[in-house]
Length: 90
Image (cartoon, rainbow, N blue to C red):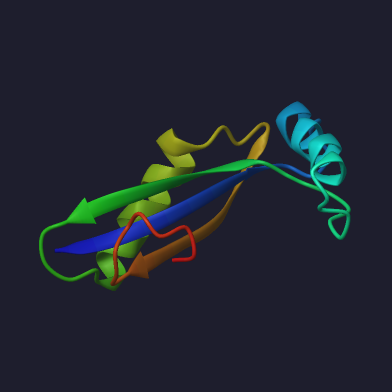
């Protein structure tokens, strides 16, 4: 079983109120080294078998047509993942 991870972010010019709220809370919690926060979303698509170039191309098309709103969002990453899909570092 393979996994494709898709990351979608708001375009830089779009206001990100959730990111701003987190950015305001970080210093109050002692995390003063961070200067900005942008919030996004991640999708993990599961396929039977290997993640091939064709699967990645189909995932990219799905991301562009369904998983993102091209008016306000950018698809920033479409990649294969071999490990556990719950690890945010993957």
